[in-house]
Length: 396
Image 1 (cartoon, rainbow, N blue to C red):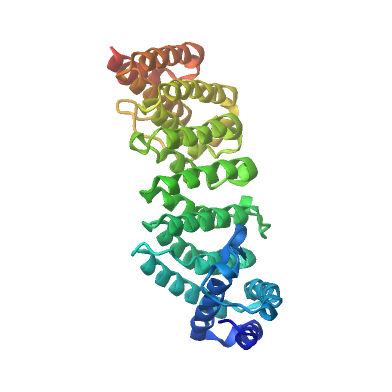
Image 2 (cartoon, helix red, strand yellow):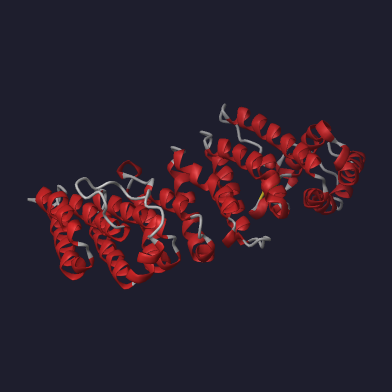
């Protein structure tokens, strides 16, 4: 039975938490556990952005709610949302107490879900909502919040991990769209921090989580690709982490991401990422789940060679610095960095020329020799020795 008196207590608790959240400390756990119980009684379920909406009518639950009380429910729901919105006014220490309490509650929900009971998603939803309203001080909360959500993504209960990955991907997309000072485009440390959790999802074994991760990367490329100056190594490593055992669907989504990168973003990508981009394209050339993707990947490598050729002056200038990103090519110790870039491409195409599938071998061979014919004149004379001995003769 949920009476007017119960709701009066709840209202008092919400007002207390709203006004004195900064001094609650460890008592947040008691307050939030009570509110979680209220949410369960009212049948509220998490929706987009972590807010709570009626998932079933309260009459579906075992609670008996009087008509007088029903009128108060919308007010309570609004107060509940405002409580987490007001976390933006807490100081850093108080915010950590709130996040710790939510993580502790979420751990308790995860323990219950191991026995295949329907888990409470209140804590995960409110971690998402708290993260979104506190993006102006993202450095303070990002690691503790996302570290816990990454644990949730590993959970065997599908509803639990669905909401874990929903929270991470929603947060990362919102964080990349947020306006920072200095701007995100110029802040390498912040880009790496924000994309880190998305990259760490690559180690999660569940296919549904990996699919959401790659869909999120595709959305980020469409909405924030121009700002990712320092984030490209992480993005390319996410795309390239998909392999044959992940199945055709994941490979297809990852390859969509790579196609978008090669067609739209090579000019904004730092030169240090170009060898990784070549390697990633070659990985899709050698996967065996989908022949058409392998052939299209070889075509992408031709597009990359075209980009190298058309931007040779710009690349030669920018490549004059550190060349540690390139592999060593034995026998040509003083190979210029621009030649090393071409050798990365030729070596990967050479690998595909000895693929087990005739169609891939033929396509890679045509592309390799067409590229050498069209652009070989750019190479220094000693580099030809590496092309002959380390690419052509291996194919023979």
